[in-house]
Length: 172
Image 1 (tube, rainbow, N blue to C red):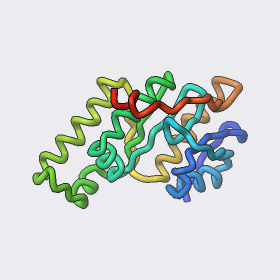
Image 2: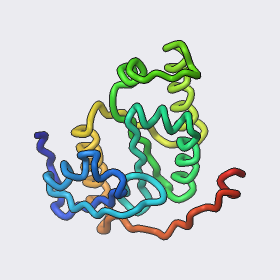
Image 3: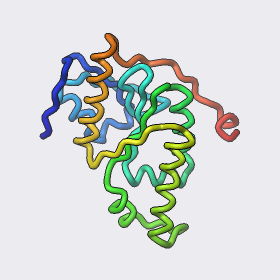
């Protein structure tokens, strides 16, 4: 198990309930972080009132691109948070080798599609991209950012009410 240094012992991270089985909440708890589960409409982790993080494993990144969720999630992140981040977790090359998509026959097409989507996230949505190799490093990153922000400010993540958009608004 990786040990993490907590500058303050009262770190709190809000975690989306759908991330419960990822292993990250358990690692956060083992590191002394208070994990608050909630159903988040935007993002997977809120480490501060203006910082939301969307976490994508390689298979999830690919499927969210194919079904259109990725760019909707990015637009929601920038709409509701001034400092959104995207964590891409895992090895892109291995993820592409194990995933078979009928619509894209060549490996080169798949890798170009992944890079194009990540470039869109970074350049068009202005969302910084962080790559981590596994859940341990993702946990370390979440703790590091929460730690840094908690030293700068005296309060932690605050949940804001975010209204769900109607399907008509999403289609537009």
